[in-house]
Picture 1 (tube, one colour):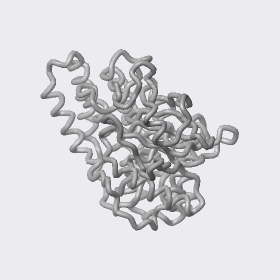
Picture 2 (cartoon, one colour; picture 1 turned 180 degrees about the vertical axis):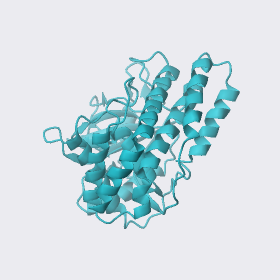
Picture 3 (cartoon, rainbow, N blue to C red; picture 1 turned 90 degrees about the horizontal axis):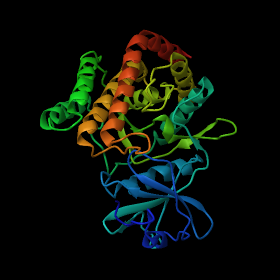
Length: 353
């Protein structure tokens, strides 16, 4: 049970609502996220807002990073969620061992999988718009998240979990999945060195808000992952999500070449000359790398069960849910391997236009 929550009603404590000047009784659980527990709420001034119990894996200063970057986006006229201060003008509220924050609510639709190439093109456009908008932001992140895509570190963590937790009841099945992860990792191409850029850090499809009536992509949400890193890794993370025609834990995972091509075209058209040739050419290999890396992370948490959230209505345990996610990402990676040549062709074509 999370601190600061009413145990009986599973709603935020009244003290939390009061700290942000929120309307009592307005909190409604939002769809399940992987990390932070979230509610839709109303301010006493009538505003529709988002209340979050922020996971302890994030330092409090991350809210300052979000505030600075979203302020930069807003100053350029872009739609973005903004941090809403407490009544005492702080960016977060610590209560009973828990950390809370409020964000403005972006009205739109969050998807768990793309349905067509038009949506993929829009996803590419909105991510490129984000990258261009923050390219001139001179800011040192307080939560730097160094080495977040250190693939070898994540593979090492999986090996350690396999070795340290032999008594876990799911150890045999997780070990079998791990062997598939390691086999794919041995086939990863080397990524070229490139400069770091400000990136979102977790541009999966569910972190893009769409206008329901038009399918226009509105903005990126879930900004706890802001950092600097090579942009090809950001795009690889995006594309392994966007081009998988099913949700991140569904059984029938794959990789859609038409969705990839549309997404790359949408990104290229909005990015203009933002990226260098080496950054563009690294995108297919980065897509494969992030798929394998995420499979390793899900596989590790199938034993650790201490990081990713899980849906108890669909899976009997956190381990079972993370094994489903692992199998999903392994299927994506295996499909990406088959499509690498066509992905390079599509990327080169988009870059040349």
